[in-house]
Length: 138
Image (cartoon, rainbow, N blue to C red; front, side, top):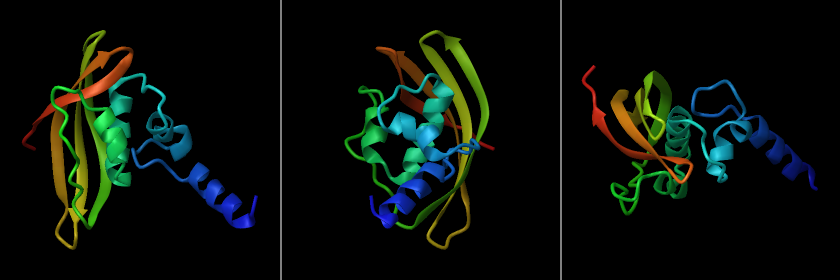
């Protein structure tokens, strides 16, 4: 393996995950992005945030419930994601959960924006999927 490939691989393996947990991407959301099932709705929410940061449309669509899934994700050019805060998580039952979060972002040179949402998740075939969300006013 060339030195550049080794350096690049080491960088990916040690890069902090954008989801906000203090872990390397490959040991955190990288696992879910690679196909492993996220074990909780909160971890799925975090992995979806990381997928938005990384513009991973394939993962976002695959982790979205078929009944509410869009055809494509229109990523806004110049978007810089600034952080994710999980406000609360609630298990409704073994197959349904809610995660309330605040995501901060900046588009282009504009001032920072907040997305505050209570998201609904369902577990189907042992995998959590995002159903939809209600915007919260904060």
